[in-house]
Image (cartoon, rainbow, N blue to C red; front, side):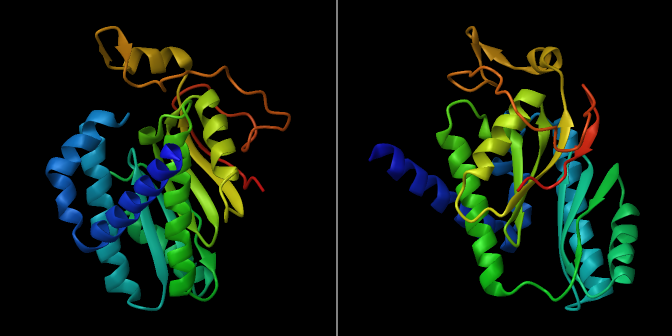
Length: 242
């Protein structure tokens, strides 16, 4: 009963956060931003750059497309994920070119689909799925939820973050188990276990960047989502996992 109540509270808080962020992105420059810096594997500079990329990118998209396209811009460690719908391939390429001109953009993953814009009902469903995935991560004792960014578009969940292969596999398993998820696409920057240990903040002998009950690395019977992933530092865009 307590666990279920906690999940509902987390989902409610996340939904409220998503609504507030749409209305007042500047809030993240204050107290909320400070909390993110303390729990994120990106540098504080990268986090500030990511927020600036999202704000500037959204402005550029509005100026050039107006209401003719539905495009979401998500930045993580200066990598940009584009999701949503555009009328044709020309608009898809144009959106990528616009965002690529922004300061500090390192790379772009263009997942824009050609087709009609999603409905408000579909977008509300996507927001709920994102909240469910984050809540499921919080409930999983072997997943450190704060190191992942979750984006959902028409039932497809995109996972971003700086993680190890072990963490990527476990987060994928959690996301796949959430109701309403049609597929999972991994957009990760991989770390080695040694790099993860080196960057972890420690306090009184407690590892603050690890889940409270670490689990052994799960064994996957299938191939990695994107083939042979680099051991460290490489950004990998995974194939959809149904």
